Length: 308
Image 1 (cartoon, rainbow, N blue to C red):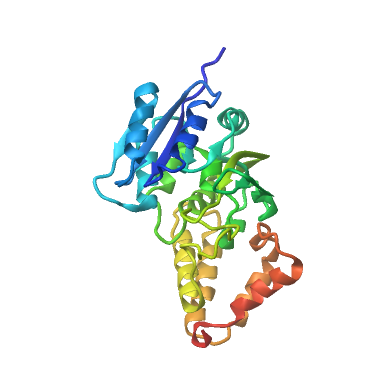
Image 2 (cartoon, rainbow, N blue to C red):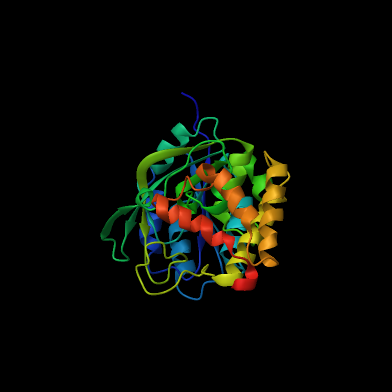
């Protein structure tokens, strides 16, 4: 029987003692036989570190790495990825619940794909089901087309696993795009992405979560921007994507950046609207909005920065 490849679980923590034990229990009880947990703690001030140390004493496949100062989730994930030894790397948050067969199913189905991900089930902070999956919110894309990831993303960090060969291309993680969005974009440019239509993680939604997808509280997500800031943020993301050396269509990306940049100087940008309608199906295939909402999303790009 062939030996299974090592899977590295890249876990990043910061003041996560509230849910960490439950998450760790689901990690150490994964039924996949060859795994390591690389935990990077971002200078927590609560009991997170002591919890990690407690589990590391019981399970020798857990290694703990402390940041001497808080460097943020992006740099922490970057460090965890670099410290990982496995040929496959699965990203992990500190407050979710993994199904015991998650790693086994993902390893069995990744095949020749650069990245594989799965559906997730939303739960409340107390663990109660919200009766909604990620696939109810966005269309889950699989394939080799990078264009769906220009405006949207369906690949959540906690749900993805990618090959170690992808690491030199995704690092350093850029500041203008969320790390999971960037990894999906790079994977689609270098190869293919696969998808498992089954919730293998219970994705906890609570006030202190980094994202607020279902808007379970009145708190705005930390990545919320509007008006001119949203234009500038989107443009920064496009410029980062266009600078990737291994883009399948560099000329297409350069054209998008050029047209989108004109939003900064033109009150109305008809060229951008025409361009987006030309590539409507690719740009909006992840969006689960109806046709009217998708059309409205495109027409919002008609107006430039001078009117914001």
